[in-house]
Amino acid sequence: MVQVTAEKELKNLFRCLGLTLHDAEVYVILLARGPMTLTEVAKELEKHRPQVYESLERLKVKGLVEVSEGKPTLYRAVKPEVLSSIFEEEVRSFKENALKYLKNIERKAPPPKEYVVWMLRSYKGLMRRFHDTTKQAQIDLAVCGGSRFLKNIIEDLIDAQKRGVCVYVIAYEVPGEALDLDLLKPLKKVKIAVSGDLMIVRDSEQAVLAQRRLGARVKPSYGLLIEEPVLIDYLLHDFFNRWIRSKPYRDEAVSLPVSFTIFRIAILEAMRLMEKGVKLWARLEGRWVETSEEGVLEGRVVDVVMDMTTGLTHFVIESEGSRVRAGGPDAVVEEFATKKILLDEVR
Image 1: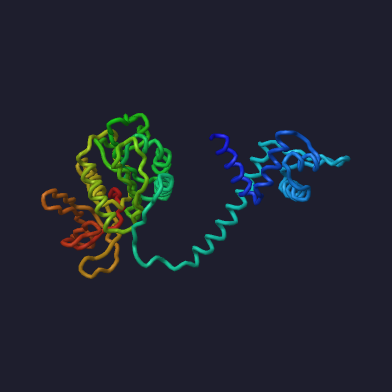
Image 2: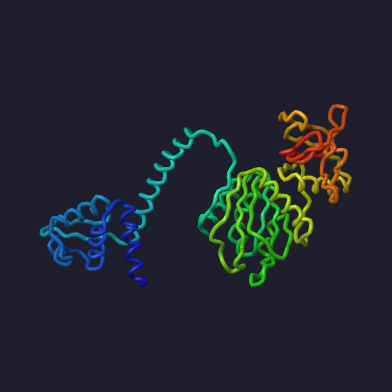
């Protein structure tokens, strides 16, 4: 069974090089038998000489077969390592040309008219999206997962943190999956919870979500790629509630200046800084609630409100002689709805 699979994969490799199944058979027989004449190869494979000759010519052009100049003419296969390097070079060339072509097409495509939710139908596709989403982060990341999941993406998380991204991780102590705390030591913001879904939210713009309905040991076979702002806001609501209830493992103070798109996390960090006596200045990007016009609000942070009973959460910003309440992206009672926050210390 293993041999059959290996032979099938070899034939697939030759297809990638633009070669036929018969070409693969010719290469293999030369590799196994050593130098042979055209007649010997044809006899060994029970094929017509013209058919074998065409295969040898194609293999020669690709650099997979070497030819002697004597009589009779001998053919020999290059070593598998040479085949590997030729394959890698061909694939690299295919990839570069294909990506260049696709990017030109992408530039011509009209911008999306609406936000959507995409279904990811394989574990590999799901994990690729988790990696890509993490690598694209510029401001903040909200991450949930067990030890196996976090081990898979830990390098991406560390790289994001080095780029200045605020990385918030809720790690699960899942039955049957021991939590490796040493793995998480390089991260500055980690809390521990009992269980939950696998999730990454990037810059409040994109989320990748997978439920583990069959237990921790079973890899999820599907997930969701979410770009719909309302759904992302709900996911971040849930993440924040889990964050404040979870057990702290690492919770270093943020360094100023610092940016956020996760509004409630920004409120939480501002409260901690102000409790230590730090005087804060803020620049908030968003929209004015009354007119729905986009705008920027800048000024000194004079108060931070987080009322868990009523749900009211906002900054009070002193700007141009007046005080303005700035809520989250779904603000209704406040004067300003915030999408992005920059906090710094008053100089």
